[in-house]
Image 1 (tube, rainbow, N blue to C red):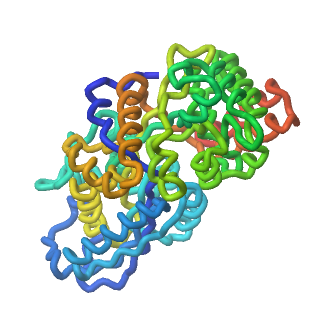
Image 2: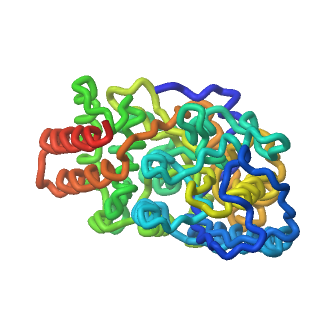
Image 3: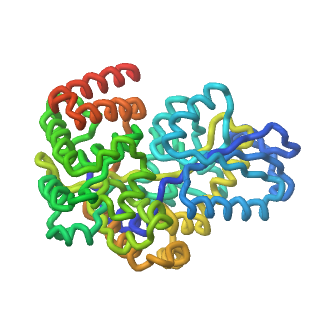
Length: 452
């Protein structure tokens, strides 16, 4: 797996992010609506003072801070473009995976969406190639505005499907206070064996060492996906050469099961965050969107949390942290593409990108001002700003020293469900490690065959 270059990761390492996504509903009732054509086909100059459009924005930012940011953006856009109305579709990332395919198949097209991995939406022919907009003379956004790796994650060949706003990385979040009380230090978490030992030592009474949200396929997949990077494994790799690494990964989570609350089989992220925030579990695999998810539950948890790359597995060369980008894209079926692009430019401007980074994650923009981000973060996290800054420093070091480009996986939503089902059987003792590996491998191969 290719290591991120240090200059890129130094620039990436600005501030924290949560999972944002926006849902919008478009209308055909426009007097001076922008055209449904690409810039090359547009011939009329738009009067932005009078243009009218109803824009649906698919938005997965469900924390209070993210919703406040969305409201601020909507208010500001209403001031600049009085006849442009933004309607948010507040959907979680997992709900987007379920609902957007249905909407697109029925020609119910929103206008703008937040994105992570764009693979599925591209397969559905749902996203517009926005490279012509970036190439248009005078465009506010250019290809060289973004940190290396972030734009590539949102592209396929020479087509660009999303404007990167934030860099996202999956890591291990550790309650340092719980760990120290158990007799270990963060610096000792170097290998999977160390993680298993720490989980065992932290498990006592009603407190547990590890929290793995198994109730939602997206997260049931993400946790072993994160750990596997540090074992030199991509979970979609079913080659014979990967078998040993795969078995080791499954064994690792089988060992951790003894140190997890039984309720984790029903958890999504909200339940995981609540348990971690309240000091009921000591370690969770999450990432650079940490503060936005836990602050409203218990700001004090930020003061005692450290972020580290998931430690090295038995077949891994070193601890690695997969890095992707969160961005904003345009639906191909939007009836208001010029207006949608204008709003994408606005959302990606320094004013709102620094606000988004302060609330949720690490900016993907080269020109973002670190001082401005930190200043805004002080207002977002006033009760935990010192801890927040320390976690940002942790993320900075992770991105510089351990960041690797996150792979995109064709058919990932189906693979997520497959992994969830089989991990549940493994962790409840219904199947052996070998049986689980075979079932996952065969299932992934069938999913891959569908996309050949």
